[in-house]
Length: 196
Image 1 (cartoon, rainbow, N blue to C red):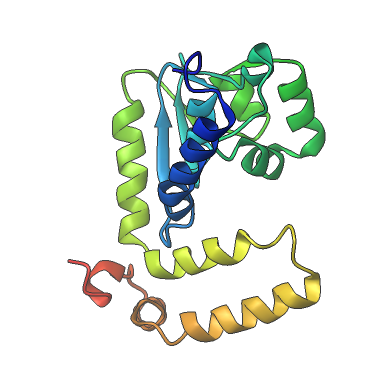
Image 2 (spheres, rainbow, N blue to C red):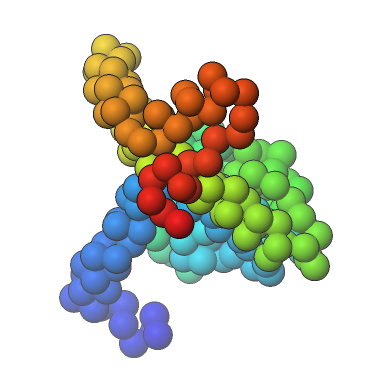
């Protein structure tokens, strides 16, 4: 595809269409779990970094591969990678055309958990269910606030946290969580928010 669609207008149209679905996916107001099995290379790696929780099978490999082609990293790679692992490690990974195993990616802070190849899907689904059963709307609010933390001043982040907390504490999820804590029982966030 790139051999015939790398002229400026084709690239522009492709990235204009990409942002129409990728930015809403990244901005989803609920936690998103991603599972990687096999190779996450180039745009596939960029796509895997769009999740909030990243599980990888032991056989997984992560590679940017953009500079091997003479292209800049895309699909959100230059946004997410420095935020996840720090600017120095991101530059080293990208400029060095490195490939990381799942364990190396975990050690660098890119991957949340490494699973066996056989259990990856079930472990990722279990985590997704756990998050879905939690106060997912409040977690989504926290996700939106954290997404602004790198370009927002401390003063403004405190203001955002205060506004976010005012909203969170008015939610049915907070009411259920507080009631459950007082009654010394597990909270049932699903029932409290009408998600059943």
